[in-house]
Length: 128
Image 1 (tube, one colour):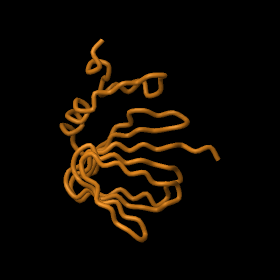
Image 2 (tube, helix red, strand yellow):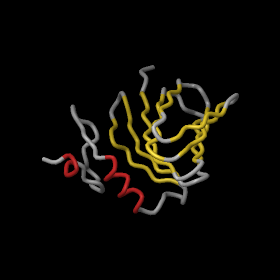
Image 3 (cartoon, one colour):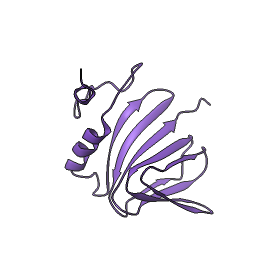
Image 4 (cartoon, one colour):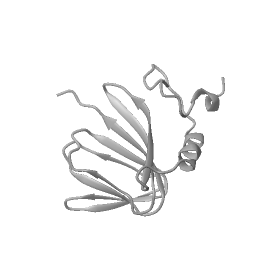
């Protein structure tokens, strides 16, 4: 089976937690871009979700913001294409295509798309 055929985009009962999952990101990105953006500023799809981790592919239009003021998990943000500004209470970091950032839990931040941006958000789900 071809990896490109292994991911079906709009199936409500698609598998999000298996021992091994593969995704063709360019195909998924193309399909998400073809859809209307949620609230006019972003669109996203959860690729993987279990009790330990969540992986979300997000497309942000220029100027779109994501506020993580209540984030209680460690995250990583990988810019697939585009540019974002990642702001914390005391610094602002610009990330462009290919950049990867990690951020500890309880570290309040905001993410803003400088231009249309595709990013991969990974959330580590801690056991408290």
